[in-house]
Image (tube, rainbow, N blue to C red; front, side, top):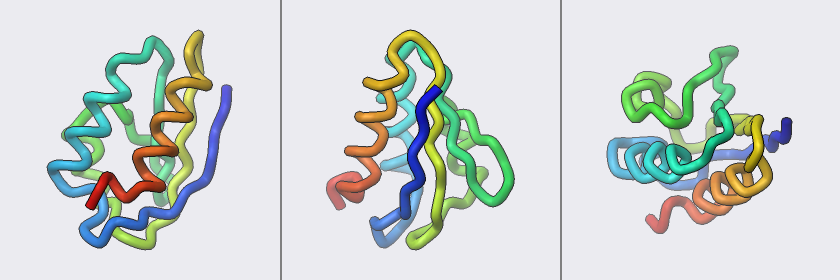
Length: 87
């Protein structure tokens, strides 16, 4: 299991477009990927779960990956979040 704490930097937070992009990207990994936010564990492969978590700009989250390709999954997740999803 690997994890990293991150702060959401894009102005709109995890709204529909970045949430969709993120869930699709995480879906290609065999590992389980979870976003920890406000005491809840959110399935990072589920668009609806990400949207329901109401993750806003400035929120701190922890991305946790667990499985065969966990390092690759975490690396891509970190890159996407730190880049602000290109916004």
